[in-house]
Length: 385
Image (tube, rainbow, N blue to C red):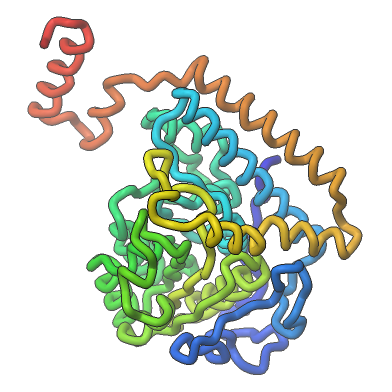
């Protein structure tokens, strides 16, 4: 299996928030208005806050690391394939694997994951197959078709629009008396979009069981984080909405897992939404249509490369005697071969049907879409110039 299905974390007992040994909730202890960031594991893979470390077994940490490795391998292979003209425009994830994988791992199986478009690790962790993901970037509409037992909405390209969808799912769960949580992702640039403020405001007023997870990778395409908002942190944007907010080291899987777990606890207990800012970095381009050398210095990238989430998690596992460089190289090679095998299958059988571009917007295709479809088919046949 390339991902691990999991039950809800055993922190909620139906009416009481269990603190797991913490005397104060993380979201109360780390105040973004004071520039405080949750960090449990440092850049050398050492645990620097053992009292805050979540209850993750060694086996579970290794499972998460393998999903992170698969994410990196699949990402690298997708970039190569796109450069060869075999895949459409692609949004790289390198450098953000811990934020993605650990956040999804902290959810229960019945919780909803509401993505933007740069959450490959979360999608794999939630149970979406790599074949489905590659189908999406190949331009096949079936890349948005997930198994019924995978509670995840399709990839959302319009910035911020998915946040309100997540709030809607959360409110539906609340009305039905369920304990399901919705986790929605957005980038740092998305926090300047109106949908972001609207979603936080509505969720705060009605105590929606939703988690807003900001992947702050420091750039909204080519715009530096400091140029698109004057807020000292993105987590503090929760204050205006009257909801908790916390900034975490997004390259530290333990910090991400702990924060999301606690936010999910609070949501299940009827305490409403939480905003989490994962402070991370996009080591690659915004998409394969982007050239990051035009707007950032190589020195900056080198500084963040030292903070690579895979490097620090690997070192943690090696220090505990759970992993080795030899195992790492072998696992990466296996995943790269697997990713290429998956894509070759798509190349053989995944050519999209033209009709799929038109027939799923409505239950029954309206007349104007039928006209567009027929016109496009004639164009492809060379009958229309």
